[in-house]
Image 1 (cartoon, one colour):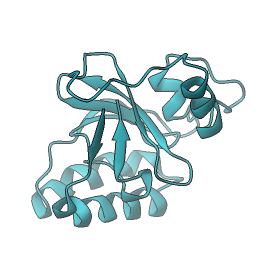
Image 2: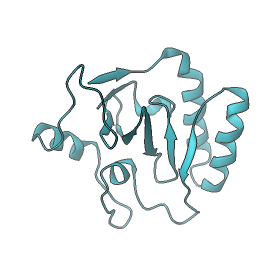
Image 3: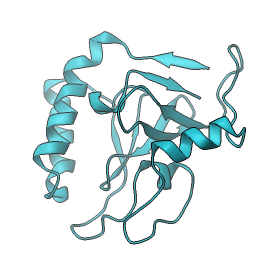
Length: 149
């Protein structure tokens, strides 16, 4: 099952990209910046799990697939594509509604992005920083415009 981004979210998503790149090494500042962004551009993004400086040790796929990272390294887009190709991860067919816990894969960007379906929303880790609960496309623009569930 594929879902596509609403073009109306482009400004929010661009601002999120800017926040993550500007504050990549100041993770504590990302939370208030994203919260304050809601006054400028309404969103429903909520913090799920905060990390402190120096705790950045896993990526979105590690989080979404409940895996362990090794020295800050975890699975990348190619690993997820292999799991899909080998039938280990099976996409839902059209008309088959997503279920809580389903893997969400944003695949039309360079690195892709992964999250967990949670009752119409997605829980995902942005980079090696915080985990967020958000609407399917309330995430950085660079993560892609199409998601498979």
